[in-house]
Length: 328
Image (tube, rainbow, N blue to C red; front, side, top):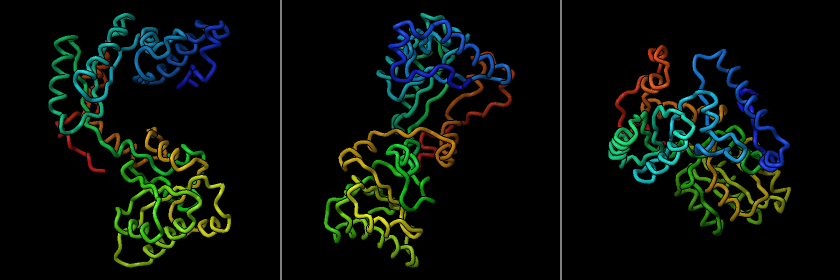
């Protein structure tokens, strides 16, 4: 409860504007939650949602909440120069309005080939215009935005039919392949494409599904072959013959997920999906920590927020290359 003292589900804004939800009660819940965590912590990190004005309609924007707590603000923007700085300026002005000090700026998801230029000019602009330091400049790494099969289970509200032990395996959007060919052509594609490919197929193509499963079994028993790491999503699965599904539901089958959506909707949902970090996905969490830590000056962040006593225990920022840890 202390982690999210005020939740804003659908209909909340209307109730607030109709006077059914109290502004004072909201503020009390936030302050009580903050004090509860602060009393047993060396440092409290408050995560805002979106930009600094989010929550304004219910009188609790990120900037305003920071002013209630007496907290400093770290502004974060995605990579770029002009557009990134413009975005930062909009947020900085609102912080200034509520008398919230800006501790620093972090630029996220910077294209590796533009890393040095972005870091130099954003740092120069922030220092010259606002006298605010650049705390970090983090190069993009595609893997950190790749969903694993467990993420797709949550996205579609379905569980894997088979291959459940592989649900933490990740796939990129580039790994996504819609099957609309004959079985013979499909099997040629399966043998030529990278082994970690995510195939999307309509339930009317049970020949494709069974061919996929048989190819997995053939490759599994064959010696000196690459591990077969492909998975398949069956669309409009309610139309699938139950007898075919029973042949797939076994321990010696690849990961298969049955969904109710059409192939077009399924492809769109996956392409537009951004998975959230969660504790179950240890691989991606570990990769995220090791990727971000060297690119952020935690000592400077602590000093800028009045926590000099914690500097000795903070992770040390090295001098990373923009390409450090970019392999998937």
